[in-house]
Amino acid sequence: MQANQINLQEEYSKTEIAKVLNILDEELVGLTPVKTRIREIAALLLVDKVREDLGIAAGSPGLHMSFTGSPGTGKTTVGLKMADILYQLGYISQGHLLTVTRDDLVGQYIGHTAPKTKEVLKKAMGGVLFIDEAYYLYKPDNERDYGSEAIEILLQVMENQRDQLVVILAGYKEPMDKFYESNPGLSSRIANHIDFPDYTVPELLQISKMMLAEEQYQLTPQAEMALEQYITRRKEQPLFANARSIKNALDRARMRQANRIFDSRGQILTKRELVNIEADDILQSTIFN
Ligand SMILES: Nc1ncnc2c1ncn2[C@@H]1O[C@H](COP(=O)(O)OP(=O)(O)OP(=O)(O)O)[C@@H](O)[C@H]1O
Ligand SMILES: [Mg+2]
Image 1 (spheres, protein in one colour):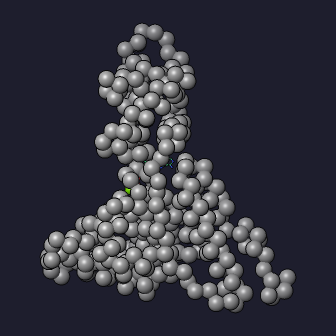
Image 2 (tube, rainbow, N blue to C red):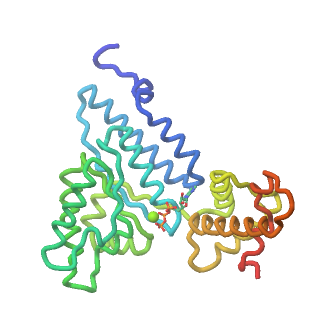
Image 3 (cartoon, rainbow, N blue to C red):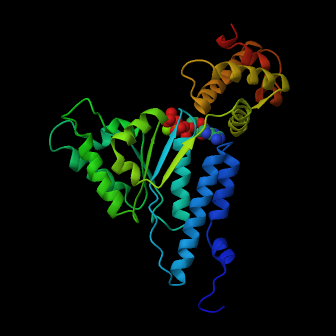
């Protein structure tokens, strides 16, 4: 091949990116807008790399991100996968993800914040810094708040060392939107604002089956119908946390299954009985009272 030609497919197969993207598709139910965005980022990085190889200017794109969405919609999970993808694409050198919250960055007393924030940034270099519930960084009601000091330092590093560190700010949508309104400098340095939608009932049912299969349990057909009813009701209740609420509900169902099996001791057990979650294990939830 000539010096001014390149085989994109070949470049693509050199990376593990196809594999990582496929795993992402398989392991994560739903989240179509999130997956689409990740593919776009992957394409951009690959094309950038090829441009660089051919001597065309390739400005290192800022890859800082914002993940907004309700509790349990997969923000932390996708953050972890994102670190892996960026590493596979050679964008970051180490691929680790460091999760922090306000308390890890902001000190209680004057002079404590800068060293704390810098220490965290140092640990995150080469990887992804995931700031959970990022809106807590900024407390407008408190004029002697040190959060803004942490934000200033963060901003500088996000601008000057963006080829060494990707920052993801995560949190629930409304407070995050407010947070960005008060910190436009931060918002404008984030190229990718990704919104995580709430899961639908069928998606939550599919997530349930995946979670159970991982632990070698399965739903009987009646149990599946019961679980669908459970999810429909649970979704309308306060403090619903999407996939996390489902995980908790399944833990309780497993406990009821164990109790049911224990109560029937004296009879011979089959493997199937140990694997199956029955409708009763779901229907005993107080949600059906
Ligand atoms: N799309 C999905 N497919 C399968 N499992 C999922 C999916 N989304 C989330 N989960 C599972 O649900 C649980 C909660 O997800 P996660 O912690 O990533 O949510 P989160 O958005 O970070 O929540 P929070 O805002 O409360 O921190 C995890 O156990 C995760 O594995
Ligand atoms: Mg989380």
